[in-house]
Length: 269
Image (cartoon, rainbow, N blue to C red):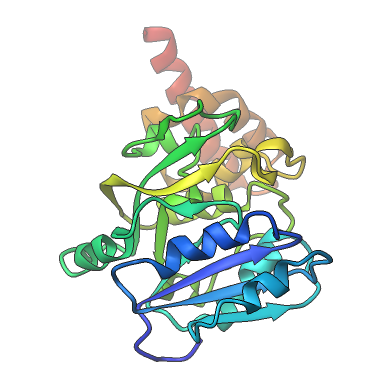
């Protein structure tokens, strides 16, 4: 990542995306705010994806086609090549909601210090975790993000966040949830009440499962010193199991104390 004056880097992983990539790119190129770059990180598509992208004669579109180990590896490769002050990850079958999204984000960055800015997404089709045409999903507090993720098509990340972290490539579809939990445990997020993107409910993140992702374990790892808060009471049995299996005495003592607190409070209720 180099220091330049690009404001937003839009990172789009693609693989055989010929049917949808034109709408995706057009929703970006028609933005009223033009200081951006588009990083296309292609996984060696076998259809017409690369030909379609090449037809866009815009110097802000930079295409890389190379083998990867899944969507989060592709996103990480895009991060390594991006130059923007803010990073935005868009699915190749998704679009920005209207022509003023980037301008609104730019205005927000001038009045906030938060390094994660997010809004809503309009869900089109069956997403499993959201209804067709639902506006997903408002402002997230601690209790809410422990149960479901912010739609990653609705989030802008300051580039500085990625100096030391990346998406965990062991995950198939939950790498963005893992990242957001980690960041939420360390940073304040800024919510803006408008629609950022149109999310297509037929993509990989909807139809696939992630057998490597254990939500409870991620929560305990990232929010370890905050587990005593009431928002974590639903995990008391998992916390107890962690206390039993931990090899560190200090962890056993702490986790047992947390478990007993939640047990007492739950019984009192």
